Length: 158
Image 1 (cartoon, rainbow, N blue to C red):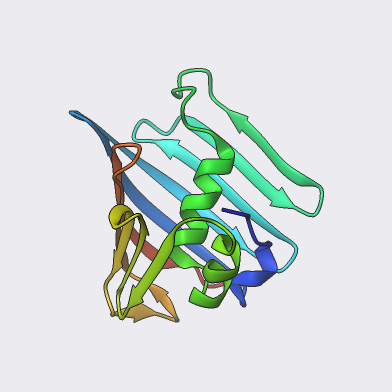
Image 2 (cartoon, rainbow, N blue to C red):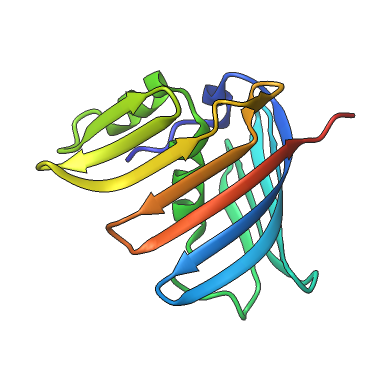
């Protein structure tokens, strides 16, 4: 996948998210604040004890990240951003991001999935109920890497 830019979301958004991440038998809950403008994506995540887990800023300068030493090394900022793009960026942007790759993107109302040679690699489902255009809840599963995310979102208004 070629990461599109923050502006390709097509709008600015500021959301607070409660995320349950499962990897194998392990389950971790954390909170994130996600701010997207045409110029940048800023994500700040804390664990359930309030410790900052990561800060990721993605802009024209590239990807800058500050990851706590206790966060597993496998959690790479570029993968977090790719998950965000797959979950929330428009279908046309996703199709362009995967053009030239050997995968097939299937999209239907409330669901999107990525296949390679008929095998499902990734899927995401959103409730059709939205708050100011952003899904209230999302379920994401990366079958290739063996993890899933359950996300509850609430837009933050100024």
